[in-house]
Length: 206
Image 1 (cartoon, rainbow, N blue to C red):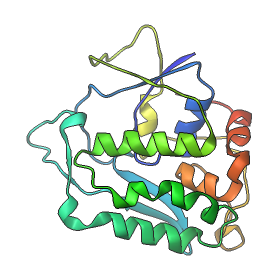
Image 2 (cartoon, helix red, strand yellow; image 1 turned 30 degrees about the horizontal axis):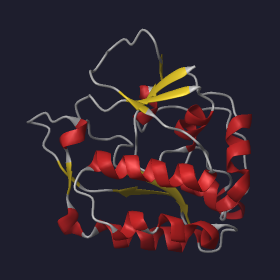
Image 3 (spheres, rainbow, N blue to C red; image 1 turned 90 degrees about the horizontal axis):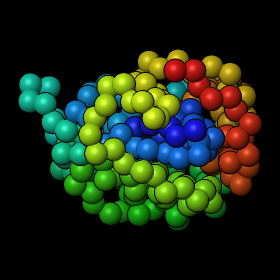
Image 4 (cartoon, rainbow, N blue to C red; image 1 turned 90 degrees about the vertical axis):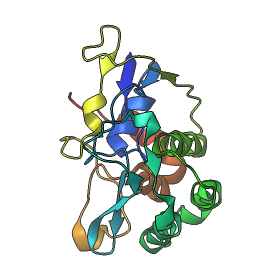
């Protein structure tokens, strides 16, 4: 299966299981940027439940921009805040200390464009999971692709994903299992079992 999917900010579990269970992955990079999506949003499990974090971008709905042209608002000093939130949420998880050094370039290196940051976050996490994936990239936007299975809907925050098997999360006893968070939640809690978990899941319906 050749999957068409958006590169997002620390992709959620549904996006990553789609990637892991595909023969070929093609990233959609030829579309117009849209707000209210996982392009610049990360959802993690904090002490009070689901916590949404965002990478601020300079974007106006009035003037359409290509995804690849949208710049990060680095004047907001968002990287230290994102790192601090992850440390607060996952410092007690089994594998946080094991992976955090590999992730540090994503919080210490300045990126100018959100697409570049998302592609780098995918690359770093794929290396953590030890996935050998070399994605392809679109050159034109196709509303109805003919040679790929279209999973682009997974970029939407309201995309419904069912049938993800529970795994132990840091605050499970307080708030229960919260499905389809950022892949970081699965990585910090399951560590080397992350790929095996992903391969056991059903592909999300589209």
